[in-house]
Length: 325
Ligand code: CP
Ligand code: NVA
Image (cartoon, rainbow, N blue to C red; front, side):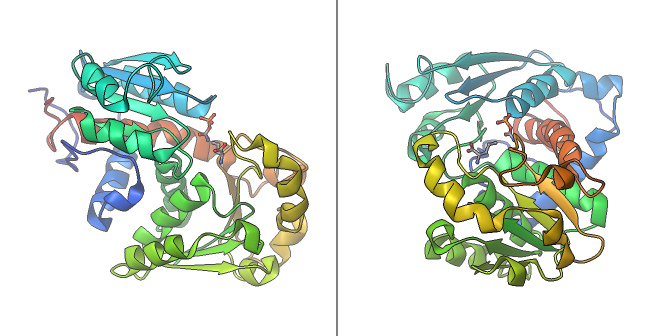
């Protein structure tokens, strides 16, 4: 057992992190508390929490933040990372997701996967005997949303009662995971998008279920001005996600009225902040004056990827007292 200064914390032993909806609000609050605690903790004991442990990172799509922040996170806790890109180690080409997962589980202590379709990732995770973390799939980006709500808590104290507005492609992975995080913590999520990019009814129903015990709510608007009224947080992401490049011209034409500009903030609360998961396209989904302005939290969000993922690895790989499993 390795002694740490960490208070007993959330134990997600035996779990995966594919989708935030798998967490209950109590677990999510505890994970956020652990992230805050680890953010200020550079003790020797914490630096050995994952000593001798290996994190495999299998990426089918490009990445800067997710790749580097996970590698730094595991290294800062005394473990090591290995990275593989392309299709040779990933779900589905040379062998089945199940076989790949069973083999990797014999070598490493946790796996981060960035992939296209969500379903093979679920099959991979079901067959793995080590924790599997979704580093982004077509449906979800839970690590991003975890860092985003950590950033909101730092700015506003709590996400409960906060009004978060997402403009743009409201069906994408970032929008869906962000909404799950906000409603799980009792916030109010508003999507502003044309009907073509509005979240499905199934997504909205699932969000209503997630918010039932926390007071969290999600609503979809087509009018960006109505959505923006009184907003505390204005969030956007790229108009065209990785793998959907063939849709870019259509998306750009349809999403132009949902671009975040300085005018968007005329309708928000005076203290409203701007957030974006990055990478960003200045002059498309967001004006340079907004993303590079005083309201922008984008680099705090990017930094918090590291702190959130340190907490996630500790919760998945150690027990609730910092003991390696
Ligand atoms: N926000 C995010 O996930 O960035 P990367 O695609 O660079 O990992
Ligand atoms: N929605 C974007 C997020 C990138 C971090 C994509 O999937 O490409």
